[in-house]
Length: 395
Ligand SMILES: NC(=O)c1ccc[n+]([C@@H]2O[C@H](COP(=O)([O-])OP(=O)(O)OC[C@H]3O[C@@H](n4cnc5c(N)ncnc54)[C@H](OP(=O)(O)O)[C@@H]3O)[C@@H](O)[C@H]2O)c1
Image (cartoon, rainbow, N blue to C red):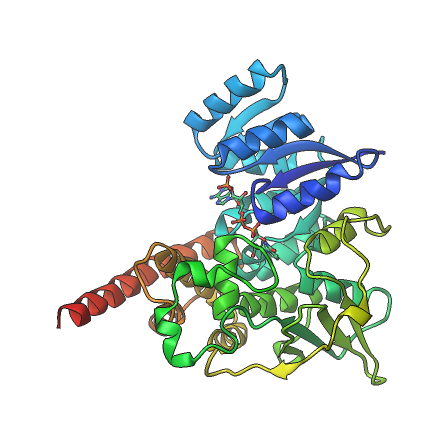
């Protein structure tokens, strides 16, 4: 039986890696729908290669162009646009599996729609879980959906936990990003290009900046808490610069299990696509003799304040993680547009968390209310930092 896939975010780094794996197994997978936001050219190319039944893009103008191009090429793909189309394609009865690979909060509504429809969901979009952990997990359970993580750390933990009983502790590994050893005083001068140049993983711009601030690991702590029902005090983060050990779990008997592999997202993607079977992913077998050493070190909370923000948000509960995520999205976007300094990213988030007493996050309405308020406060904080910078430059 062919597994029919809807790819949310097909034009992103995860989307491209997923299609690479899918193309290796035409006997297993067919593409039901490809969904992108702005990248019309790449979406058109992907449609020509995979001939999906549906394609969706962000705007009506792009949808019209895409329709013309596909029709000229003789394709019968139906073209949709807008947010409602994403949710409809994620819930469609002709699709079995939804790959949730949109970046940021935009991924939440279609991921929830897939959960409500009881789909098998391959989750890369960690922001959806960070924003609405209780709601998303409850929806998954109520509608008997299956949630398989493809974030490499969580996929590693998933593999280490499989049928081994309850673990005592989860250890998430972190490469340390591009600034692990950079002089802390010079971090204020980091450019977007430097922040996006991750030493081990090629990724989208937002997640690359998250990795540089270590907010990516902070979001992953929250993600691990919800996915594995693990209390925050049982989740630890270790710096592991080689990115070979993707994460580990500890058991009561002193055993530690880890999952290893080259840093290539096609491994966790192939694992989740084929689960509970295994398929080739295109990634080479790990040659341990070619790796000089595997190092682990504790994380410096002063250099990387983002991690404590995540633990505090988990302790606070309710919509605190929603606020953290929203403020981060605004601050990262401002940094990428050259409006704020790299070091202002976590400062903006701290400021928003200080100024906002988040309520509950039990319903989608509560989640979106907290998200919207946090975005507004974050924009104000960004403007305040911008103003300070201009004043400093003039002085
Ligand atoms: N990349 C990795 O190695 C990696 C690893 C683990 C987890 N993740 C997580 O996976 C997710 C995707 O990361 P990525 O690196 O693949 O990001 P990316 O390269 O920036 O791609 C993002 C995708 O989302 C689409 N998109 C953006 N805004 C959208 C919106 N408002 N509505 C609908 N679609 C939208 C983009 O479409 P267009 O390109 O058409 O604009 C693109 O297809 C993130 O949550 C990230 O944290 C990534």
